[in-house]
Length: 218
Image (cartoon, rainbow, N blue to C red; front, side, top):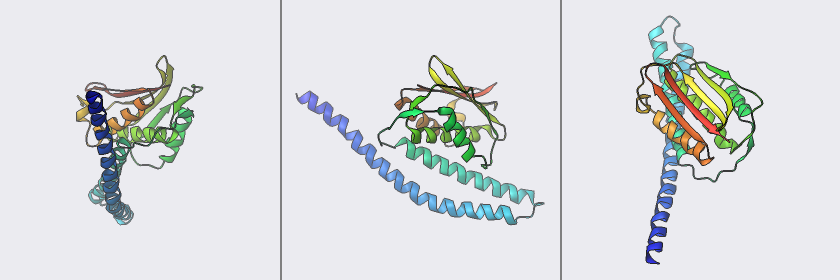
């Protein structure tokens, strides 16, 4: 009896801690987004007023805007990782979700996204809000690691379920840890969402051929 009680007490403590961490991170993210928004406005107006011939200054302003976008992405991934709200799965057309997310990002600066949609795929059981955040997150991840090269998102239907395959031909990376700031957090957030829906999320990093991320959902 005492042993069982001990197990229950041990299991309950992390849940309380996790909730406290989530509240703390939400507060930090809220506070950080305000100065980031102000800096983003400054970078935007700098791009408008800087002389076109001043390439160095315009490059620095663009880099500043990119760092702001990256910071917002990292904050969003952190919030998703500690999101303890219960899932509300429903039948979802994953390709429609991809198309909608891609349309919202159409004016987004960065590497070009190439879509290869198989069409007529079965619906997957997915929380729509988490699914949209997942796709947005992974698109941002591949924008980050692709640098100036295009990256591809293809869909297919296999024995494992409906598959999303992200690929980029950027070479030189030898491990997940080498992908850059925010990438480990992004992948942890993506894996948590996918695995919570009973799916799989696998990353392959080849220094000679590039990076492949495969997500399977049912």
